[in-house]
Length: 103
Image (cartoon, rainbow, N blue to C red):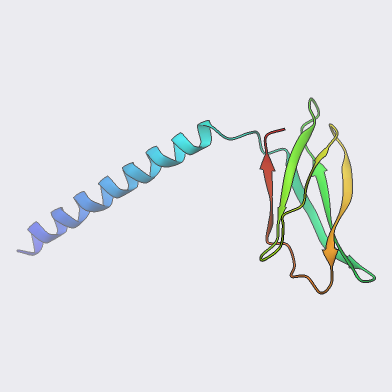
């Protein structure tokens, strides 16, 4: 009985990981390159900033800063640039992450 349960559990685990791998590959095929990277989150006075760097040296990259319960600011970075982007005041919540988007 234990052997049958172990085989059944192994089959379920293998099929779940295969499905997850296939879904991840399909999602990655439609994404834009991950060029914009966060270097640092910081406050300057009463303003919140994020330092972003464009790691792609061949093209301009676009981004969206995701903030809970607020409109998400977006913008673009020239190729190879690093820039401090102001996204709100200190009364706003801190940004969750920066999402790369297509330009």
